[in-house]
Length: 288
Ligand code: G1P
Image (cartoon, rainbow, N blue to C red; front, side):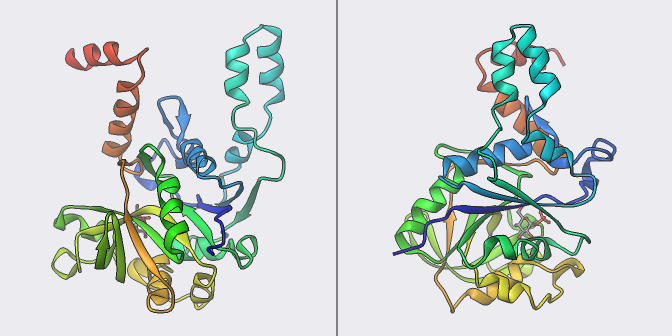
């Protein structure tokens, strides 16, 4: 029997330098795609997968995310007075049961692995999911749900992966693949951001993980990896051989919303599926 996945950690302390000046005063996770901030898409995907305990690993200047998941009394009062029922409902859509979301500060930017380690008391010995909100994935069901279904069959650890162009391997964690079973691939090795000529495959990790709590023991060693940072990939690599480790080549489209082109494409993709926008969007783009 595998222990169910009820907890998720969102590392959201990053500076968002690729989106300056937009991200000078607002967190990159609050950038909207259409009308919802990235963090909301990520939380909705987790809820769809049956996860109900959420931790955001934040940093300075990230408080506005706490406000996003709380009442906005003044706004709600005005919308109520004006009889704007639909807007009121939308503004309240992210009010989860009290106590569902906790926050911890990563006090220094020491890498993704360090951010996850900051959530060790929340994880407290349970298997957990990790999601990077920059990676917006459109899929039905959502990627986390697909991963949890696979995890319920074989247990252990999972990374979501997709096949990328070889010249792009240096942007990702990359797996050494073993046996394949449908879209599930045994992971025999993991390396962070390899040069194309050194990459063990082109199966690249995108920002969704299911991890066993023992990863925290490896993160506690605080070994410095690629880019001078404490890498989650390095700690995960140490679990291989100790525990089952699989990749799920998920079904869905991933947008790298940490990059301008990915974020723009995500906006267009979402708008193209909105019947109130699709036709006018096409027309507007045609006129550019
Ligand atoms: C992080 C991870 C990397 C993963 C990527 C997915 O890198 O370290 O292994 O492939 O997210 O988006 P980052 O994009 O934060 O540099």
